[in-house]
Every structure is written in structure tokens, then in C-alpha cells.
Amino acid sequence: MSMSVTFTINRAPRTIELDDPRVTLLDLLRERLDLVGTKKGCDRGQCGACTILLNGRRVNACLALALSHDGAEILTIEGLAEGDALHPVQAAFIEHDALQCGFCTPGQVMSAVGLIEEGEAGLDPERVREGMSGNLCRCGAYRGITEAVLAATRAMGATTEEDAA
Amino acid sequence: MNRFEYVRPRTIAEAVSAAALPGSAYLAAGTNLLDLMKIGVARPARLVDLNHLPGLDAVEHRPDGSVRIGAAVRNAALAADPAFARRFPAVAEALLSGASAQLRNAATAGGNILQRTRCAYFADPDSACNRREPGSGCDARGGENRLHAVLGWSEACIATHPSDFCVPLVALDAVVEIEGPGGAREVPLRDFHRLPGTAPERESALAPGELVVALRLPPGADRFAAHARYVKLRERTSYAFAVVSAAAGLRLEAGRIVEARLALGGVAARPWRAEAAERSLAGAAPDADSFRRAAEIALADARPSGENGFKIELARRIAARALALAAAGTPARLPALPASPFASAPSGGLHG
Ligand SMILES: Cc1cc2nc3c(=O)[nH]c(=O)nc-3n(C[C@H](O)[C@H](O)[C@H](O)COP(=O)(O)OP(=O)(O)OC[C@H]3O[C@@H](n4cnc5c(N)ncnc54)[C@H](O)[C@@H]3O)c2cc1C
Ligand code: SF4
Image (cartoon, rainbow over all chains, first blue to last red; front, top):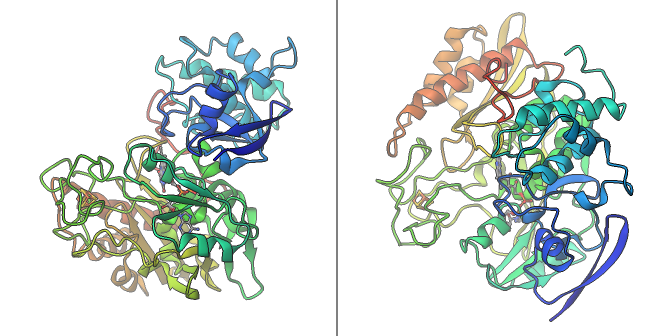
């Protein structure tokens, strides 16, 4: 039995026929839509490489059943830049050398976008480190990532209430 | 993952009747269920999707002072509900100490209380496990068991219930609201998770097909708000379940404890309410001696189920720590949790 699902992916409507109910959002993106920027790390919710924004909130695409999210709005790393203009988080990652091999980077970037949107961490490095702890980096680029997230938060004009914390 | 039939009910009645068919499982966010399906531990014939059911995702503060948390409320949304976090700070603290930001954005209240044990042998279909396969034995006995239960375990199963959320909830007398083929009923959370006994495969009070629709905190459960904490000892900030944890709530008047609540996590197959310890605190001074005595009482019946005797003293210390932090007062804002992989060096104390 084939089922049809509709998503808004990176601002464009997409209708997809699914012949198998087992497809996760991660496999849908990578294998059906060729959006391979979202990475498959552990496939068990334990590394953060597959982080996407689902209806505006960061989640692990590997533990989300595609059928279950029929109608949802999805933003992946491919939809972040506006044309040639990088998103402030992407620009900050380059500026602050926040990656080495790059495999975890799309997940780190999407997670950082979600974190800044949540607005809980502000410019407090300790809260940024905690808030980003769902994204592992095997190269250990944590320091650069933290600096990039803080710089992007500043660039995006988020509140500075945590400045003194 | 096995193939399954996918059902998308639009009403609770439709969900309950779909789930009454044998082999059905409810799908909330799937952060536990899909994970277990990927490794062949859960093999449901039918998934009944709760994500398109209306009415399960509200946090209602009712006029009588009770609070009703819909089963589909996301863990992150509940912790971020300002009125909820203000009235039940230890519940928010427990939610925020669980999993990762991504998982908390997805995970639901109902799924959290119904998550399965993290025993490694339960998660390995090639191992003997009475909980997964009744009568097959228990490879955790004599295996890797340093994180297993020290209270309420049986020869048949020594697993723990891994939820953080449940620990302060059980301390606050939460009630589970259920709809099922036989109608609606309620079960106190403290009786919801079953101790293993001789039938560890019967994990909760739910009968087949029954749906958790909400969790409720009774009127007055917010009277501990000024002195309530959750302390979780774990090996990393994200993706690490509690080695042991404790939720504490105190009511203080004129320098004495009028009423206390204490529950432990990571020690048993259910969130563990420590009522005798609570009674020992009524009328006592909020000091280190009272807290240590209460902790001793809370763990009085504890015994190792393997190479985990260290957890007993650890649990005593975490219980005393949670009580001491509660006595010091709920902070206006929860401190950042230490020990993220992003942190270069240990920074500050446990939930300081
Ligand atoms: C890497 C990782 C780390 C984690 N760390 C922690 C942690 O530190 N602390 C912690 O507490 N948790 C932790 N978790 C567990 C997480 O909290 C649970 O996976 C989550 O709460 C389950 O919610 P869900 O909505 O995804 O449930 P699902 O996975 O959809 O469901 C879980 C179970 O509950 C049943 N179910 C769901 N909703 C209902 C309902 N309304 N009525 C009846 N049955 C229902 C399902 O059939 C299934 O059996 C972690 C999970 C992962 C993957
Ligand atoms: S402790 Fe319980 S869950 Fe773990 S292997 Fe033994 S029976 Fe299974």
C-alpha cells in the first residue's frame, strides 16, 4: 500500500509517495529527496548529526517517522542560506574555524539555529555549551563551535541579558 | 525494523479501538519506540499514531489548583511553560536534565513515563532477558550490572526505570489519567510502574489497548515550589541516564521542616518514593544531620543486585544533596548543567 505525504521542505511544498511506512524523516531527506546535507551518524538519536528544524524546533530526523509528520514544515542545512548569502550561523562557523572533518557540521549548525531561536542560552557560554550538548563532534572542535554560536547570537542581535551571567 | 500497519486515528475513541487489536503499539514521538524497533527489540504489527489526535497537547492550570498535562505535551514545551516551571520547578529541572535539547523537543509526557528500561541485555535480542522474553533468564545477573537496581528488584529482573521526569512527579503525587476499551480510569503514578516480581514483562498498570491521556498534579502540589530541586548524577550532560537521582521538596516554617517530599531515580524499576524518609523530616531542622538520617532511611532496604553496591551510598548522598539544595531555596533560574562534552574542564558543582 502506498501512502502520500506532504511537507514544506526548505520553503517548497513537496508531495511524496511512500511505499514503506518505516521511512524516517532522515531517510526521506537523504534517500528520497537527495537532500544529503543532513547526515546519518548513529541513526539512534545519540549524536545529533541528523538535526533538522521540524516546525521550527530542532529534532533528530533519525527518530521521527515520516508518515507521522505529514503536513510538517522542515528546514534542513540546504535551506539555510539565502542564495549566496550564508546564514549568520554558517558564516560564524567559517569565521571561527568551528569544524575539522565537517561531518557533524550540518547538525551542529541546525542545532545552533534552533538554540538561538529558543533564546534560553543567550550569550552565556556555559548555557551555550549545555544547549549544544546534543551534538557530538569526533574531531573535538567544541571550542570553535561554542565561539561561533556566541558570535552568531551576537550577530543576530539576540538579547544580551546573559552577558553578565 | 519489521514492517507494520500504520493507523492514524483522529479521535481518542478511534485510537483506543485500533490499539485493542493484538500487536498494536501507540506511537508518540517515537524516540524510544522507533529506536527499539530499529534494533528488533520492539516488533509491533501495528502503529497507532497519536500525533494527529486533537486535545492531548495542553497544559491546563485548573481553578482548583491542579494541573493537567496532556500526554502529547512535549518535554521541552512543559519545561518552558513559565507558570508550570514556577509552580513545579523540580519537574522542570528533571525534564531539562534528560536526554538532549533535540530529544526533549520531540519526546512527549506520555512517552516519557512509558519509556522502557535501558538495560543493555534488554536491548540485545540475542541475550536472555525475562522482561523482553518471559522465562528466558536474565543475562544482567552476572553480567554488566553496575547501573542496575538496588531497590525493589527480583531474581527475575534487576532493571531500572530510566525516566527523570517521573521522579519529581511521583514525589508530588501525580496521577495518570487513562482511557481504554473499558472506559476512563486513573492510577496514581506511584502504582503505575510495576516492580518486576516474577513477571517483569508486565511493566505498567496499563492493560492492552489503554491510552494515557494525561498526567495530573493534585491541588496544592505547588506548595513545595520555594524549596524544590532535582539532582541527577550521571556520566555526561547529554545522552546519559541517571546513575542515581533524587527529587526533593520541603515546606519550611520558622526554621523547621513542616513537610517533606523525597523520591529517587535510577534505583528501581519504578520511580521510588521514600515516604518513611519524608516522615522522619517532619518537624526536624533543615540541616545536614536530618538530611543524612532521611537518606539512610530512604535506602534502608537497599541491597546490591550485582556489582552496584556503590550506588547505595551514592543514592544516600544524592538524596541528602537534593534535600540540602531544596532547603537552600529554589533558584530564580536553573543553573547551566555541568559536564557537557563542550566544556573543557569540570566547572562548578552538581546542579550547584
Ligand atoms: C539518546 C537518548 C537519551 C535519552 N536520555 C534520557 C534521559 O537522560 N532521561 C530521560 O528521562 N529520558 C531519556 N531518554 C528517553 C526519552 O525521554 C524517551 O525516549 C521519550 O521520553 C519517549 O517519549 P516519546 O514521545 O518519544 O515516546 P515513544 O517512543 O513514542 O513511546 C514510548 C513508549 O510509550 C508508549 N506510549 C507513548 N505514548 C503513549 C500514551 N499516550 N499512552 C500509552 N502508551 C504510550 C509507546 O507505545 C512506547 O511503548 C533518552 C532517549 C534517547 C534516545
Ligand atoms: S535485568 Fe531485567 S531487563 Fe535486564 S536482562 Fe535481566 S530481565 Fe532483562
